[in-house]
Amino acid sequence: MTLFGSIEPGRAGEDIKIQAKDCGLDDFRVVSGAITKEGGEWSTFYFGAHINTVLRAVWRDAASEELAIRRRATIVIRKRSAKLYEVAVYGRPFWRKRALIQRFERRLGTWQPLKTVVLTDSERYGALGMFTVALPKGTRIRAVFPRSEAGPCYLTGTSNTLTA
Image 1 (tube, helix red, strand yellow):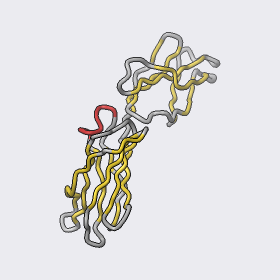
Image 2 (spheres, helix red, strand yellow):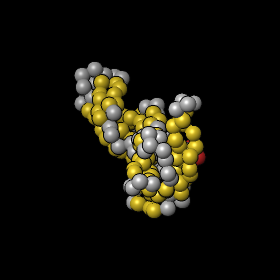
Image 3 (spheres, one colour):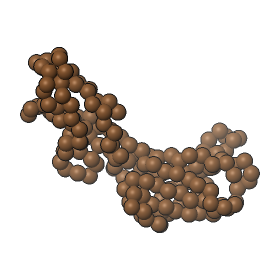
Image 4 (cartoon, helix red, strand yellow):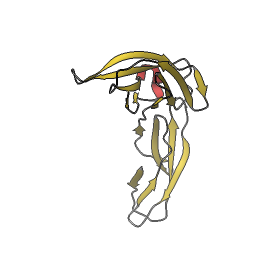
């Protein structure tokens, strides 16, 4: 994402520091920077928010208003065999958290609960869970990682859709 702003007075060559405070941490840290152009304008690219984060720009001792960046938990569903599926949730370790499996009910036009999967296999950047289900051909399913499981550091995440 591109961050931009300006300072008063509009001098060129001033150092702007971009600071971030990730969810669960108490302090800001410098993550990027920019140098002002003529008129005091600056811009920089920032791509580091992988978790709910608060950003601010600092010039000398003055900090800008804080900007909250909200991230969704990344969740993927994969078919492993005829009846075996895998759900992976990436981000922080989510061991023993629950993902909801939903099926699309064409008649109602809505997603309906199908199963709950406990994420038991921990990975460095997330967790995995396996489940079995027999589905009629053409059934669409997805996985949802709700905010109640993602905690304060992620928003609800919704996976890709699979068709049986």
